[in-house]
Image (tube, rainbow, N blue to C red; front, top):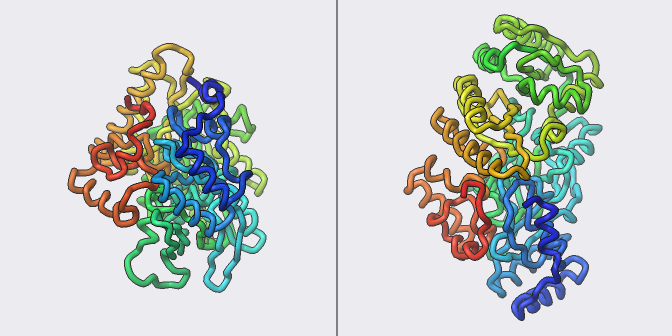
Length: 495
């Protein structure tokens, strides 16, 4: 069942129990009628995120505009013994924002203000609903930007980036979201407000900020975020290298890092997805190349010129058939537009795709890529590869048509095999999309039972009754939150 048909199936008038009516009444007393929704259409829409999980069940949907309102609705949820699921733009791909068990959904999109630019501490205080690209566009004329740049940065929010510890092409040199969050104001599952981290150079005590970033809404709700400002580079060089095989492109990435360089970005696209992107944006990608490598270096003018020459030399040594350098900011922007819109461009080929997210050692890139192609062939599926090559973060896309009987089952099985191939190569489950519902079952293959016990103990410290985004991350049987979600856990991708 697709998203539209799923929503239509839920368009009957919602049936409010006496408990629901009391909960909605109390929430509206604090926030008003307009910002507490319980209509069928809204509940059906917010029962999904950008993953292909279905079966989520939303309770009342709240649109707070302040920390005080988030605190108040959290306390009301506690009184009514309801769970809470925070939500940003809904662009997550692992099912992390899907509500289980009819919880109160806290949609943070109206908390979208840039509150303060603190140049002395080089941070910006923002609300969680600020759009990633809007923040950088605001900062860039001031000489700064926000370094994490997910492909969805035109729509994804800072709160969502914090929840999933998001990355992006330019996180190779700068680090993922965790490296760019100095402090957080958080409403804990108890309804208390806490400040985690510090904008100064040293943080006192335990790094609870670091524990919170990437916790996928299971430790509370961030209501203000102090993001670090990254200085705009004085010079940038962008190169497009074409190769006759993905193996040559992967080896080039490893050799560049082995030579002592850490470019701002290194992204590889195979021929199928590069051609789809080229059809969409006309970036000038060579259509006959088996793979292309986008490499970008930043810094002082003299240094970037030297690094660009060295990258070209290494690429040609690995069989690069052509090397192109962006000659203007407009050309550079077009090259990156092709990369950033690649996922959407595949709609011209198939109506549906499953985008994976695992990480493998750079030394294993070539062999794991070849295994991914073999997996797709065994299951009679079309696969395209585009990935953050510098840090080994793979993003294979399995293209399919959900209307064809049996095709979803083949996609599910291929997805399992891709995850296990990555783990067998010494990799991990996620680089930036999170665990959510998608990879819960694989947590037991990556971590020991004792590891999972201690991870759950951390969660219990923040949330003793486990009402914050229940049923996510920890595998069933290892989480104190299981009981909150089991009544309406959707049929999983791996089911």
